[in-house]
Image 1: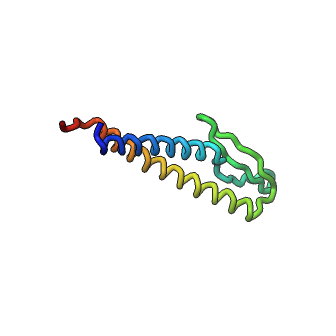
Image 2: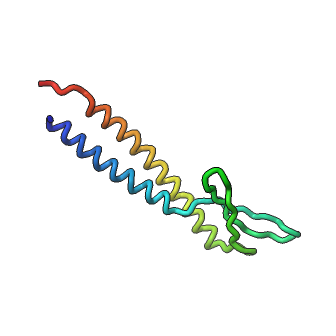
Image 3: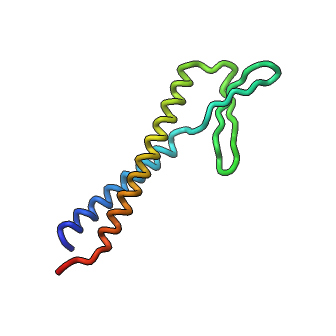
Length: 106
């Protein structure tokens, strides 16, 4: 195996480890969307979370504080960031695997 192929295989291993870490971080980050429902003239806040094909509503309270709203917004931005990193890593992994399949000149 040539020097370049060994470097590429090492980079592939590192990328796969990073991908696994980003996927774990994405799973641990609580997703969902904040929903305000009006029931009998009063406002109630729920967190809509998808579980498979179903949407589950988790009651959050009558009044939702700005701090909780900011925390949900931070979580949303973090999820978007992890999704973008996963997309980029998948492209990198695909490119490296294609490069490793090439014939080695002797």
